[in-house]
Amino acid sequence: MSINFLEPAKVALLVFTAAILQVTIFSEIDILGGYPDVVLLTLVAIALLRGSIYGAGAGFFAGLIVDTANLATLGVTSLLLTIAGYWIGRYGETTGRDRVHAPFVSVAVATVLVQIGALILHYLLGDTVSARRVLLEALPPKVALNLLLTLPVYALTRRVLALGSQPEGATEVRLLG
Image 1 (cartoon, rainbow, N blue to C red):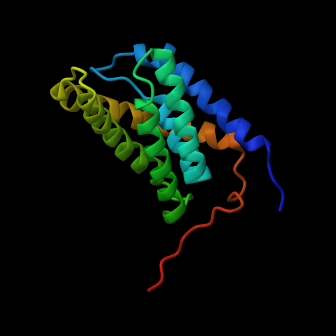
Image 2 (cartoon, rainbow, N blue to C red; image 1 turned 180 degrees about the vertical axis):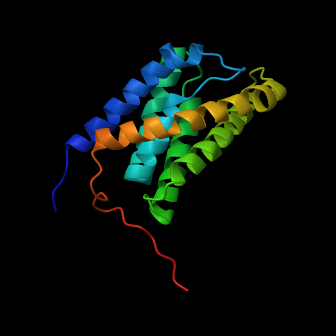
């Protein structure tokens, strides 16, 4: 059994780069009322390619960077991205990583659920948020932009991680019956 110590460093570099690009460039882009979420796209790719543990760890790290850089309530984004990374990783582990539709389905579902989760958390924290603005005005363009960028981000992440085979310890689950 060989242990690849370079793998966590690659994941951390990908997440850090995506978070910095998100905070500095992509959050300033306003297309039809929404902006692409490169951190979520990178997280989806990492979780699908490496599994739920990497997904949850990368989600926490990305959320911590984004919250710190935005001077936002520390932990909100970390919580949302940790949960998203874990469940996307589970989806990748149980349905197979080689399916063409997996990144697109994961991005669409994760974008919607993270936005709804953020709305609920901000409401519970007493922040003023507009459900109409978040769900009706910003969500559709955000989903569309994320779906447009899914393939290039997934391909880049796959290339950086140099996925030639399944990582050790992560196997596809096959249902009996």
